[in-house]
Image (cartoon, rainbow, N blue to C red):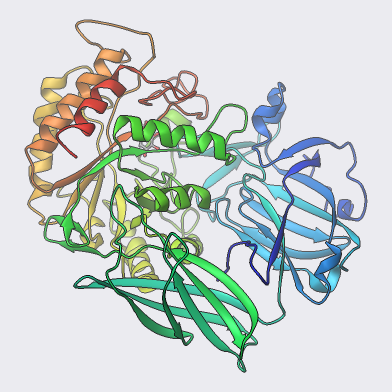
Amino acid sequence: MMLRPQDTATRDTKCLSGMWDFAFDPEDRGQTERWFTQLLPERTEMAVPASYQDLSTDPATRDYVGPVWYQREVRIPRGWVGNRVVVHFESATHAATVWINDIEVVSHVGGYLPFEVDITDHVRAGKKCRLTVRVDNRLSFQTIPPGIIVDSPEGPKQKYWHDFFNYAGIHRDVWLCSRPQVHVEDVTITTDIDGGDGIVTWSVLSHNADLLATRVTIFDDEGNVVAEETGANAQTRIPSVHLWQPGQGYLYEAEISLVNGDEVIDAYRQAFGVRTIRVDGTRLLINGEPVYLTGFGMHEDHQTIGKAHNDALMLRDAACLEWVGANSLRTSHYPYSEHILDYADRHGLLVIDETPAVGMNMGLGGGIFGTQGYTTFSAETINDETQKVHAQVIRDLIDRDKNHPSIIIWSIANEPESETEAAENYFRPLFDVAHEADPSRPVSFVNVMLAPFGKCRVSQYSDILLLNRYYGWYVDTGDLAAAERHWREEMAGWASENKPIIITEYGADTMPGLHQIPAEPWSEEYQVEVLKMNERIFDSFDAVIGEQIWNFADFATTSGTMRVGGNRKGIFTRDRQPKSAAFHLRKRWRGVKQ
Ligand code: BDP
């Protein structure tokens, strides 16, 4: 339950991004030595937002395991007297503790979702305060995603089972916000269609507003009022509604006001789109019409800034998506910056929104990551406590993202172990958690090749089948005839389930500039051949309603003999230039499939 920082008639924001003081704390002394009470010892400078790993040329920075400290001075604007003052973090990876002057005000675990705290009692309008944040990049079996720390003579090493670099730091903007003492705390908007009209239903939660009325005014995208209604839990009708459609992200805005007669005590604006989502047999219907998804699993990953959000780089990604004809993406393998979802809302991109539950499969990658020999689900590894954290991250994700029309499916995990009884017991309740938190969208998880058709015990709970398959790469490497035969056999099984199927990963590592005929793995030609082989299969099964290639762009990973400067399965390079496969896709996606 948390609204976004916003400037309205009753709310102000001040962005705290920029240069901060920064210090490593390899011996974890900062808390006992009370670093938050003073200027950080041995401090350097750090940019916020950014991952700190790639800003230095020192390997110790890149491989650092443990807490780091961020600090800056903040002046509370003098006009904020009488308001609540809140500090809001869009994300800090993976755990953070925050102090205002000498007082600890909040701790949060989970690297990809926002948190905030009301600091009114610790600050004064017009005066300065010291803001200190301890950010910890360590993963354990009780974090999502999981990892383990291995001690060594050189110091601790972080191991994990997911295939992207463990970037850390303050990755998104930090905000100082003001809001009235009496204020809106949460809003949930759902929509339906009745003939040509839109039905908009909302539920507004407020703090201390018992004596006030809740007024909801709905504006179209030119700012005209199209409906107005009073009530914290109410409904209204938009006559001749402009629907939110794939490729045409029409947005309305609801202004939620707490009013005392004519006086507006608090105002918050929530964008929304009017659209419906329904699964019907093997079809996914948006506004009653079947959709076919084209696009990618992506990463928040860029040169130098790592996992930080940057609007300019987002626009370049968006331009590449549009150029190649993608109408969808998956936020593999964690919740992305809300600004990406806003973009998707405005442009009608379809989003599969994923939790950070990745690398929960000890059958996979142990060889690559050098961490074999664990059991995925056990009292000592991924256990009941992890499951509680996982349930909470599902709730928090849905709470943050529920009002985005672009989100059409919740993915509760990527490629977990799913062929065992332990996996079934772990996941069954998590599907309920997601359905309870949001009855309006399909819930799924991404199935891995180790749990093929007939073996997977978790996909029975999915509303839509999301499959990752590397025929022609990790199996039948270089043998596309066998790959096609095996893939077709397996697909026939899944297609008999009478559920829609989206292939959420397929592809091949490709070194840009490596050319070979006949095509062999790693060449640009082979990547094209792998796509074509997959497409022949997708086009011959009616139940396949989407194709998302792995990956949109090359990205950073941990070191490994199968990773050449990171994962090279991108259709674009890490600096967002096309490989040959991009031209093939552009023809396919901008032609027949749309
Ligand atoms: C899948 C994972 C993805 C990896 C990909 C690969 O879901 O994170 O990057 O394979 O190996 O197992 O390229």
